[in-house]
Image (cartoon, rainbow, N blue to C red; front, side, top):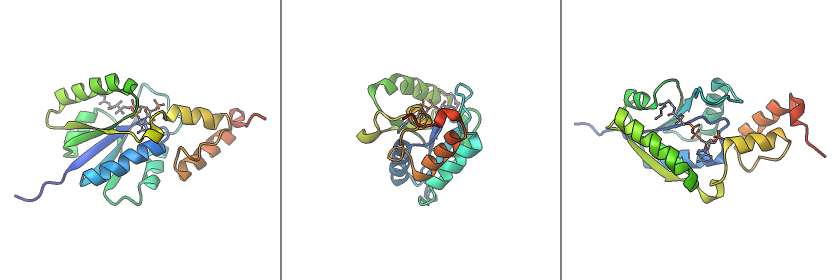
Length: 171
Ligand code: COA
């Protein structure tokens, strides 16, 4: 029997990707043979960036990581994980407040795909209180987010918000 490839799926909305996400991707890439970053359509959230933009931004962020690829996720995560032959779903845990929601999702995903385990990585403490929403809010109001997101994402945020008056920095 040949060596089994240990593949993981790291799902999220990534609207936009942040340094916190990248930290998780880099660490997952060291733990697994392959990581597929799955960008969710997510009908419950109204995204700032289109699915294509989010996939492109992540591809740019991950281009130096040879065992990471980016895909769009439209449908059930558990089914996607099965289809790509993943043994694990990776999620980053930030503050305690993430736990209940993550526990609920992991339990449901286990029922749907018992052979796929959910693996939690602790988010770096530097990014424990970071979220895509807070990055968007600061960027929209003209604040600096360069230390919170990769350079290509910071650029995209500037472009997005300078085309609207809401992005004008307040004096
Ligand atoms: N660093 C910084 N921020 C982080 C982070 C990290 N390591 N990990 C998560 N976050 C932030 C995100 O930026 C996001 O912020 P926001 O709410 O301001 O946008 C927030 O935490 C939640 O993030 P995310 O990881 O993107 O989860 P989500 O709740 O948006 O998406 C899916 C969850 C996509 C995994 C889930 O909806 C899913 O599986 N969808 C597919 C359909 C499905 O199978 N549904 C049934 C699930 S049981």
